[in-house]
Image (cartoon, helix red, strand yellow):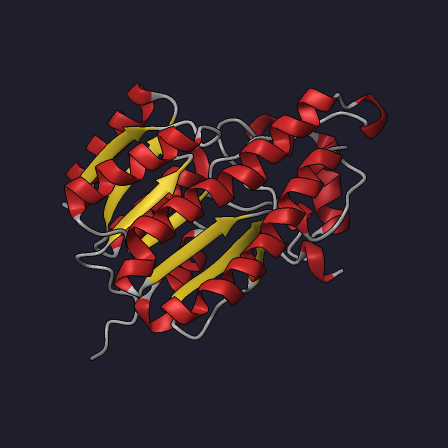
Length: 257
């Protein structure tokens, strides 16, 4: 019997792993046996996440504070992971931000910050991991967390810098997939829709957003906890070796219309 999604013995870095979707995906990968490196800026959060994952799933974990806008910090984080585990098989680029304001009121600082974190940050971490670990090993699975808003515009929450950055992540994914395929590294993107979390629950449960779900989403609802897990596991799996350069929407069908 073949274990298609077995990740035992592999090491996965998950950025933005202090709350929300990052933690959920880290737990999903740990459930399949992967050792987890929780990366974010808030030390107490990632240490708690790493301890919880180790206790619940019996895998090895490591918490590393890192600001993905700092190239030196990113390279030091990757070195620490290599010193600890000797390998990096999976990278989930989940860290991100989002400026919501009318385009005409967006400041240069807001736009630059969005690009620096969501787009350049994704590239910084991918570059460091590929160079230090995946290219030498001739193996890797990079999963970039983009957004359905990297594929389409929207009239609900004005966030043009976010659209630009996440659209950039989608095509960066294709560019890296084309370039690093020769090293047996796959690079794919997940494009989530709106998901429930402690931070979004009140907004998504509002009358306006509930009506929006009925109008704009074929499944007529927002994503629940755990509904991104299988996409991450699929793209991380060794058996998904012929899937690369893909932008996979997990959005209840939002981008199908």
